[in-house]
Each structure stands twice: as C-alpha cells, then as structure tokens.
Length: 165
Image 1 (cartoon, rainbow, N blue to C red):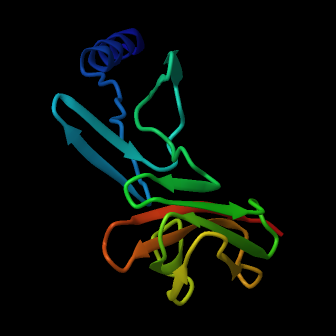
Image 2 (image 1 turned 180 degrees about the vertical axis):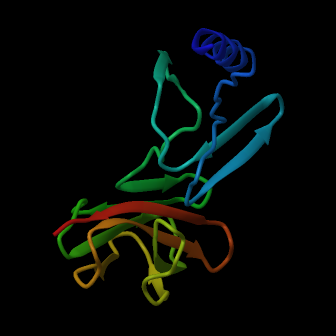
C-alpha cells in the first residue's frame, strides 16, 4: 500500500509540476526614450552594464537598460553648458562648477533615489566660472540626484552624487 501511495504521489507531482519564471522589471528613479529616424534609444539610471563595443568614435553599451553615463558631471551641447560636481562621493559639500556659452537662469534641487525632494529648490544665475555650493552634511548616507532646470526650458537634467559618512 505504501508503494502504491508513493508511486501515485510521484506521478501526480511530476505531471503537474510548474516551473518558475522571472520577467525583467526595473524600478528606476529616472529614464527616458528618444527616437530620431530609424534609431531609438531607451535608458534608465542605475542598471548594470553587460558589454561594450567600440568602432572608432561610436560606442555601444548593451544590456537590459543602461546606467547614467555621467555620474559626476554633464555637458549639454544643445544649451551650451557643462557642469562638474565634486567631490563625489562627499561627506558634506558638493561644488557645482559651471562652464557656459551664455548667462542663464537655473533652478537647482536635490532628490533622493525614490524621487522625493530633499532640499528647497534654489534659483541661481550662472555663467562661465560660476561655482555653487550645496551642503549635504545633514543628509543620510546614500545616492542623490541634483536636478537642474533652465528657466527657458532648454535644459532639464540631473547629476548623481553619493553622500558618505
């Protein structure tokens, strides 16, 4: 009788067994999608890279989604501005160093990785050589995004910074 129950249980278990599958999902603080002609680009911030190919000046990094390519600064060719954020990582203060072809008005804010605003947005006027100091000393250790927006709408970007203790 025990053999019959064992055989019946074995047959039942192997005939109705299901495998598990995991769909690719992403929880991201920012990302985007862009198309130009027959080329499309999709990205999220914070995903691991898989492989990089180079051919002359063309670089392709492939993977499920790509990380932010400029963790300590950015250059926006369309609006003519370059911004460096240092020291990164920091224990307290971040310096934003601006180089621009024209004077512009920017709003600067700070967000955590969940998209919550953690500092009051400041409006400043920048030109080449402008340095702006942001104090992160009161914040917990972790990753944050400095959000930069121009008043005329030509620029809307962020820079990833890391706060350490």
